[in-house]
Image (cartoon, helix red, strand yellow):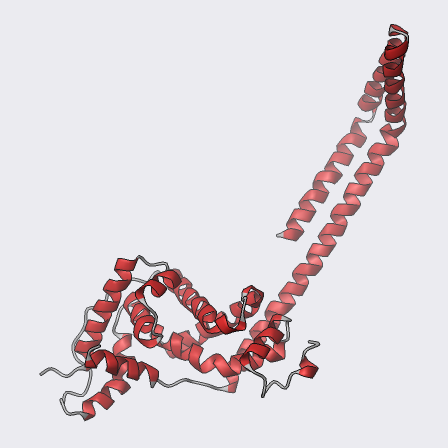
Length: 133
Length: 185
């Protein structure tokens, strides 16, 4: 190592190291600010998640209220049809077709609820995502 | 905060302070800042041209360190880990200013013009002034190489600059410092 490099290293080593209480206090304020922001972020996230969960629950409830009975009936008839197809032939398929038409009719009549429920689900997802961000 | 009662901050080791700070003990982190501020501010003052800017960046670096302290795997790695944060903070600030690689070619001597042995002492005093006359990139590389004792490869890892660029900045920066600090013979 050249003399100059040695001089340079020793000069670096001997440079003044500043220290004062004001600096620590300022860092402390910065840290406190960061912590406050983190708390606000966590609170926003919780509220967003609760809103999302509530909207999703409401959407599911709406769907279940409008179509739940028809769906259960259709599902029951579908099971019956399969069972009948396995045992006795095609006579149950007429009943299943009628149930399917009923479900379609209900879907048509309940379009408003479908749109509302979808909107709620999407809104909930957006609220959750916004809270995450 | 639970660790506060068990921890006498003034007498605690740095490792204990770091572990407590990782558990979100702000008082322990405050003590860590007290102990490390001299080194951190000095490091950034060598990289920056103004003390005020360096102190602002040092504060930013400490706040970032607080936010990321859980990423620190072992307390013993704190100096290197924090140095990386400080350098990144410096580079980001320079990128915001769009002034990282401007060249300063003024290399006229600034040291006292006598060539006596006392000139060496003068050179130490003038190092800060001489550093201010290097480009940002040269100052960064020279500081990390000569001041922090990092190898070229380690500087590459911290700064993300290509190896050839780092070598060139160290060489040119050191040469400029030599011309600035050593009196003309």
